[in-house]
Length: 482
Image (tube, rainbow, N blue to C red; front, side):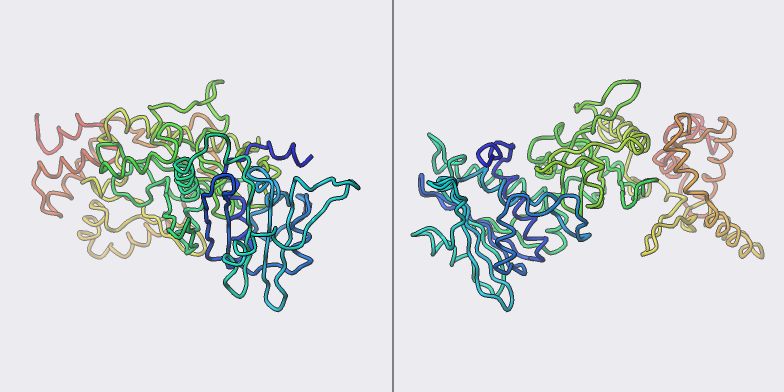
């Protein structure tokens, strides 16, 4: 059984990531990974400064299936199957040694050696201590008052025929890229990850906060799914990125492969890219150049592993049926924006109207511990102009704006958008003359209240959604006949 489990499909990077999960669950804030090249006697060590384990806890951790995947876990636990330590380790080497120190407990050390399983009496020999000659490898990794060290030796799945020191260097780079992506949110929150003493720098797949982004939505709380959150992103076009930014944003496997959904559990990335089998008009979406800028972050709680069909490798997931409609709509809108940005080299759609030279959005999002709320921005040029001229009606207008903001049926709009296929996706549904009337009011506010020239006002309006979709009307306002 153990020899069969070695073929689950781990890479060295995903195997090490599984062990980092254990470290994070043990409240470690520092994890050191060490690769030592010595030909066939090369080894890998993963050590942390977590709370460690008692002797009984270590013995339980070394058992296969040590925990029932159906059992309730701590909300911040990154594990599920009780298999990761063993299956990840044996996927790389034949000798697994774990040493640990817990407060008020003696240091414990146990070892599995696949070559010594099923001996003369068919017994399972779980050895005490490191193998002869490896004691110093363990001792060097356990330097704190508490913590755990995992040592992999006899790396028969890593150091194969023809494997050289350069191959080891290339492997280290692959592991670093994977850890930088998988734990980027935890690294940004203070987790220290080091490989051979060098800090791992986080890789943010969303370029969060970049001024050239075409979309960075608010966080959506999915209906009928406790704790499932989504945020849509459309990255900047290549023309809006510096060469180094563009190369970094491509991710470990390149632009097209990185598009799609990114599923996180407790801020740990489980799945990077792909459209989860979603699509429209009976066809599943595939990864392609036109939608390469679209990336959607999904956060799920660890209580949803079974429902999302998270596998032992934490590498596959399946969308629950009741959420497919909501996620399909979010993905469809994100893909539409990404395709327009890609086709128009970043000029058609911009991340924020104000940042791109347009006027501020009329709706402002306010974040608090109670969630997001939406207010009509008093900084919007037309709103500010009206309030400036309102006189004695100013307080009544402000009260009206507050009433409108407090009574926006956000949940109903979201449900309608998620469940129906004929809901407007934005832009003016009004007739051209109504659009022109609105534009004229905004034009006057910009010229008379803000002091812009007519040409500057038209330029700002031409860069402001949804008026950027009506350039002919924008050019007509203010008596401009061009």
